[in-house]
Image (cartoon, rainbow, N blue to C red):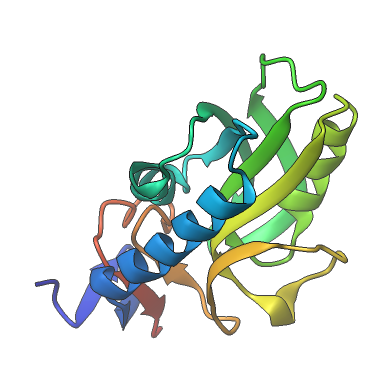
Length: 180
């Protein structure tokens, strides 16, 4: 059991969403994906670093034939989005006529997803959807249709379950929100 509060660098965080709730929501998402992508053999594209725990737990529960690949994009510095998306590791798979599901840890401003979707559409896939662990609908700055979202949260800075604060907190089983 994780402590109710933790300290990461100069900030205190309190327990917010427990691992059991996260897994329950991911299981529901996996069932939706199994139904929607039956007989389509999608390519799941996990956005590193933050989505690694979400991607692993989701894909363990997806039972349809699928492929998995990884891309690394970044738009964060400290606790705020910079709005500048940098591609660090590129995608090498041919996406033409393929069904692609982007796996994200969190969608807040939408800058990262908006940029990535534009890059993916240029490769002429059959379809592209986004599956995210967390979404902050009040923060969206782009008109995005996020079809698969496990948990909707307010505009709180969160860590844990793959999300970090300047490199720390990704390994936490639960999600914590900032206190100070």
